[in-house]
Amino acid sequence: MAEIEGSPRAPREVRVAVLVSRYNEVVTTRLLDGARQCLREKGVPDARVDVIWVPGAFELAVAAEAAAASGRYAALVALGCVIRGETPHFEYVAGEATRGLGNVALAHRLPIGFGVLTTENLEQALARAGGAAGNKGYEAAEAALTTADVLAQLVRAAPRD
Image (cartoon, rainbow, N blue to C red; front, side, top):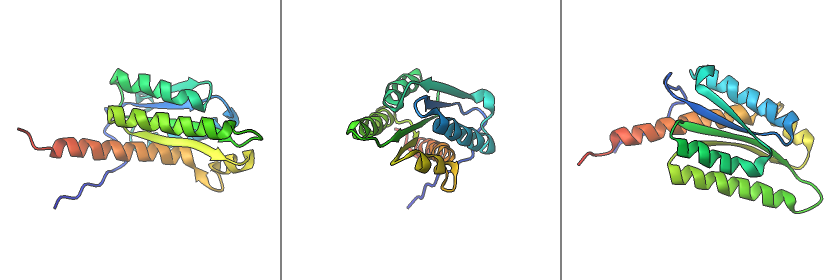
């Protein structure tokens, strides 16, 4: 029985797109800082990272679809922040962003590191964007790189007819 486990170390030729929501930018810029730090530490040069800004978390999926369809990227990282308010808007935006990104990942067999925070308040969001709870942008980038490595291993291990 074979065992495949991914590594977050990236070959230098890997290109990554980081999609970032401008809504709640005080949070998302910190998530972006974490993602950039991770990518550098794992061997992805800044010149191989494209940062794509979108208005809000809802728009992440359509930008991810375009990025995935381009064929340029080994992985995507989606960063956003949806903070619960007084209306059900939170559930719609968070749910559709999640569903849309998942659909893109499956349709293109492309890893998408999910760094979309869904929190009750700004304090919780800041804690997860470099505060006491770590940086979910860093974690999303690491997950994307690790999954990209797993997918590459699966392709190499596939029997050839």
